[in-house]
Image 1 (cartoon, rainbow, N blue to C red):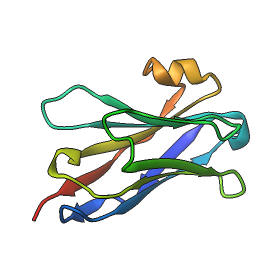
Image 2 (spheres, rainbow, N blue to C red; image 1 turned 120 degrees about the vertical axis):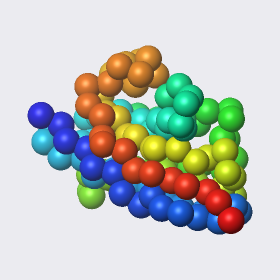
Image 3 (cartoon, rainbow, N blue to C red; image 1 turned 60 degrees about the vertical axis):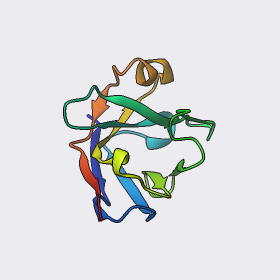
Length: 122
């Protein structure tokens, strides 16, 4: 059974940066595609980025240029680097895992993490 634990969230001023981490356990990490999602208060969950086992990435147009997804297969960890943070980035950020990247894009992954809060405020 896959377990995902996010970390790295916090309170950041506009223009700052954060690197979120998601630690994967329970299965062979390199066989899984990984994704990041976020959900702001009162809004629907948003698909932010994903990375295949091969390292191929997708980043949503709404955050392209500021968000970077990466993975370290030796550490069983996926990262989301967020630069030039804006107040509208305030949300709970979730990572997700599935062998099938289509299921991540469809927001129906095999596993979800518990989320990490990112708050952008001066």
